[in-house]
Image (cartoon, rainbow, N blue to C red):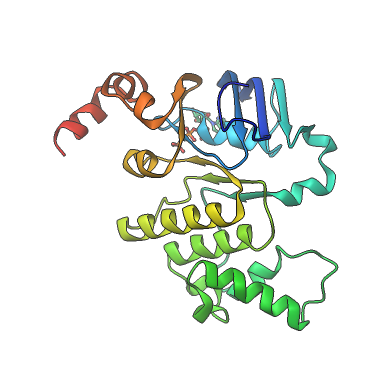
Length: 252
Ligand SMILES: Nc1ncnc2c1ncn2[C@@H]1O[C@H](COP(=O)(O)OP(=O)(O)OP(=O)(O)O)[C@@H](O)[C@H]1O
């Protein structure tokens, strides 16, 4: 155990993970653990291997060596426990004219055995949309939503069923500053209500300081990790991002 909430179960365990993209080693010998109820950010410059790391952790791309365990099991033995994991990708691309409504998308998260037209199913979906302040847009086509609204629909999809871990890959790219704060508040509120762990990639160090309890600074390898106060020092930021970001910090 590296750190985390004393006594809380480990929901994700990564040990010595190395991931290659083509000939390039994008992630090298990375180890960390995520504990129930914690909110961890992965920060690092463009190309640092952040998305590669979480895609490999989710089994979406292969890894070269190391070990990944989710809820104490290796990925190929997770079975129905995959339903306990939520994922919001960096980009959610689809044909804007695809005739799928907000409530139909969220309903896809529900157990397959439940009957779509059933009253319970409708109520369940509506409750999930209330949680993200989108209850009045349930019949709207997803292609007509703003970037921020779409991210909130994906959050409703994740929170519609009980999860142990929600992984977000730059969920707030393409969202304006107001939408970012609104989303961070909603995510935080849902976490307090439902107790899931969060692992999120973020470029917003201010939001990371405000909402996360742990930070992993990644640039192919983990350069440092700990609380935001410990990790987001000028010295560490300079080591992780280089001097450009330091100039930005000094001018704000
Ligand atoms: N499919 C691929 N084929 C070859 N190289 C890839 C592929 N995907 C990613 N890479 C390379 O792997 C490295 C890590 O990319 P990755 O997308 O994981 O970084 P990131 O930290 O998430 O960056 P960003 O902050 O820009 O999203 C980069 O150098 C990238 O060019």
